[in-house]
Image (cartoon, rainbow, N blue to C red; front, side, top):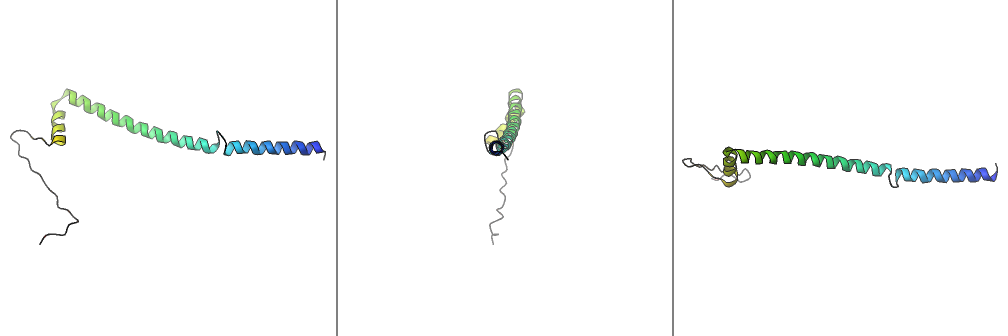
Length: 102
């Protein structure tokens, strides 16, 4: 086999390994593409959650602007307010971890 065939074979073999390295490890490699796809999926999931949260907040703002029932419900839940003439009862649940009193 002439020397230039060996040289050509060696050059082609080196080029093959360089291209394989770029394919599996270098910039734009399969591993990087996989990592970026996972990152895109996480960001899309987060975006979906944020859109749902924004929609709920938008609906709550609309209900607070339009009706007194939402304002009343908010006052009852957040501030513990009651209407005039109502009786307030507070129920305290027993702690399951504590032994029963004798």
